[in-house]
Image 1: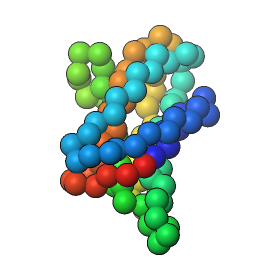
Image 2: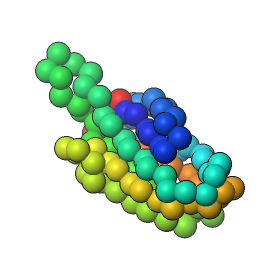
Image 3: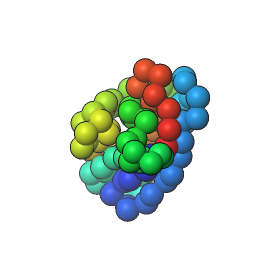
Amino acid sequence: MTLLSTSETTVRGSIEVEGDVDVYRLIAPPTGTYRFALDAVSNDASQTATLDPVLEITTATGESLAFDDDGGPGINSLLTLQLAAGRDVFLHVRGYGSSIGA
């Protein structure tokens, strides 16, 4: 799974077991529109991704700002969110249902 934002930062991670949630913290550098894409990668000879990624962005207090499942190409997640400079948000990444993988 690859997490992308407008700063062209790539973070690689993996949902290793059912129910696993990876959480990433972002403090927005400049004010602007941020694009977050979760791109599952294939991890077997069939070139088929086993992860159906789901993305939720929350505040530090847990308030949901945005949620996406399947808004990107195929079964991938894609969110666009306007953030003010210094805004502290958390990106929660999980697999849909029992899906796992990278």
